[in-house]
Length: 164
Image (cartoon, rainbow, N blue to C red; front, top):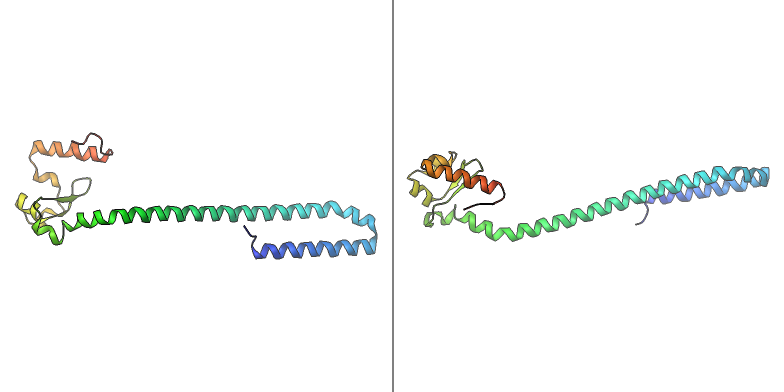
């Protein structure tokens, strides 16, 4: 992965500055001063190298995270596309086709609160949709069936194990 432009400029300017300082030191003070400056120059170059390596590692990590996010988005979009036909069929039973549905259906929250019902369910329970929506589904079941209903809801919450 390429370094950021500002790091490239910094590396160039640093190298040029060190070269100029080394030349001037050699011309004015001789090779002895230049030899004495070498440890300082080496420390500077090692520090610069460390900074560049950290920047490169951060860029690579960010690129890896971006690639992972793209893959996850692609998988999520694929799942959404796979679910669309099923969702359309399911929701159509509560909308345009609901007056002709032969099976009573209700869409409820996990706690049993009714969110939607189709016309067949309204006829089966002998209540208007406006009365059923918002109420607990268990209120319309006989006591024995209500216990069975609660057990089935618990089984679904547990991942579908032991659903009858």
